[in-house]
Amino acid sequence: MWRELWSRALLTCAIGACSILGDFGLRYGKSESARALFDNATHATVGGLTWTLIVVLSRKSVVRNLKSILSCFLLASFIDLDHFIAARSWHIHDATHLPKRPFLHCTTVPIVLWILFISLSYTFHSLLLEHISWVMLAAFLSHHIRDGTRRGLWFCPFGSTCPIPYYLYVSLCMFLPYILHLLMSLHIFPPRDKNIILIDV
Image (cartoon, rainbow, N blue to C red; front, side, top):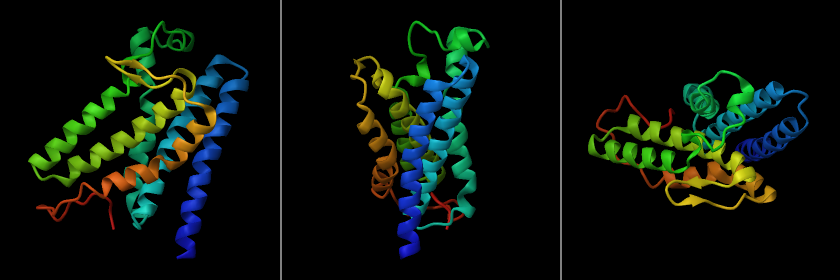
């Protein structure tokens, strides 16, 4: 019991600390490349920690769910590739000086994809599709919330919110796993394929 509580508290604090340290690196990095690399590494780490905490909250083995954790880690990082796609250039300066935010930074995208995958998971009774939808949502939201402190959340075609206040941004990053875990508990159905489960035991 106490070990479980300590694990949850440690991971929650780690998400907050990683977010704050990442912001310091972004602010005080010596070069444009260093700042971009540090920022992306922070996105990836926060994404990985977010799914790790979800696994712990589900009372499952972290070791047996390393594949899912790594998937969330990598996806949270790969989102930034849209900067280079939008810039049509591999130069950091071009990618970080776009006139508008690139398409994967629109929060409408992961919400629509999540609805699509959840709908398909219920249609085909597939826990694998449901699992993919939650990993994807966790990765995208952890990334967008971090970016939202500077420019708000972008809900195309409705526009953007105001920039998220710093204390609220850190709090949202820390409590996102708890919110997602609660929502995940509402989307459980008996699996037809017993070899596929949402989070490994």
